[in-house]
Image (cartoon, rainbow, N blue to C red; front, side, top):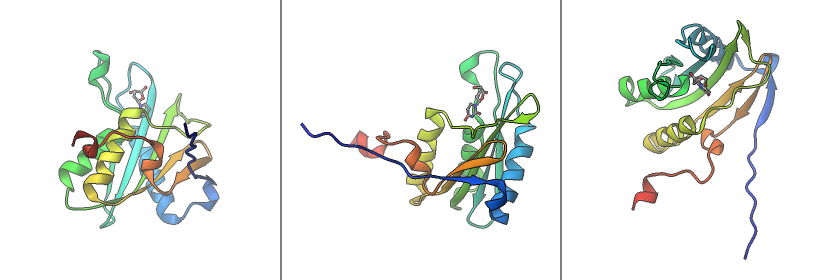
Length: 159
Ligand code: THU
């Protein structure tokens, strides 16, 4: 028997320490949250992705009366980037959530399915990307989004 431990590193970062590029991407994520279709949860999520040519792609959660048929903001943006910008590389991603008109106090943390899709995007483009999970005035910054999903299932598992 051998006990092991996995630890992940992240930085807690206040708004005034964000670079101009992160601030711009965060603003796009906040704008995206205002476009959410979330009549059931009233939980508006926005995500913004920066691509290698500086293009920004955004997404918001889109719900459905048949609950599993909706989609999270992260996957809306990731799938659109994969569809429309497949030759470009994702370099940064921001996620934020707005409830009752206010950003959540704590940084929003993506669901398991979105983490799985992030891992797929990283394997597909053969490089990692940074992710900023934003709260009201601070965020968690991870240098590698795949850190969010240790022991992930990937194509290698199918062999
Ligand atoms: N949601 C997201 O869009 N992203 C997350 O990271 C967490 C959850 C959405 C799904 C659903 O529309 C609503 O938030 C409540 O779960």
